[in-house]
Amino acid sequence: MRRDLSLVIRRAAVGASFAAASGALAIGVGGWAWALAGVLAIPAAFTLASIRTPFVAPCPGCGSLLGASLVQLPDEPVMGPRVQDLRCAACGIYVDASSGVVREVPFRRALESPGYECTLSAEHLDALSWGDACVRCGQPATRALRLSTREAGVVSGIEATLDAAVDGRSPGYCAAHGEGDDPLSRALVVARTPGRVTVQLSLYAAYRALLDANRDRLDLSVRSGAMHDPTEVGD
Image (spheres, rainbow, N blue to C red):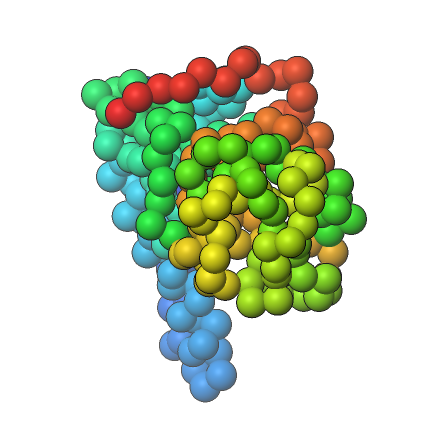
């Protein structure tokens, strides 16, 4: 990991531009423009705040430069000495940084709610390979979740049922997990909008397995054959 001082200048310019546009709308136009001014103020504030941590580092999975984005939003972690769960937009893996070293997050890490995320075209949803492990704990799956067929909304929720075949074509669960219809209990969100699907998982091992099995179907620029073999790492 290293500091990129040019990133300070570029983020300052971008953040100031957002702030100036926000101020011009609020003062010069007023009325309905206050709402748009408030929207522009959000990236302005977070981009300017990110100037304090102008760190960049190569992704340990694909070598792409992490931390070089100019615009920062509230839900995006900023590369820094103690950042956790930062996603590489190119290859999709998540990384931690500690003592100036960037490593992939531990495979056994589980978030309190689904957050490890990938996106894909809706036409590829039925072709996803989910593997043969429980997406909640990683143990061998004994049952699988039949996703809802609705065209929009969360298709892994109340309309989804645990009666699908355990053949890798549906999210798998062991006998101890999968009950309930909320994302926390199932450790999974599959949300569909017209043309797009977002998948979020709590267990990183389950996310990484899904990522590696479907790399050519997901919204990634680093495809199959460009990643090293996954290696589990500890805390």
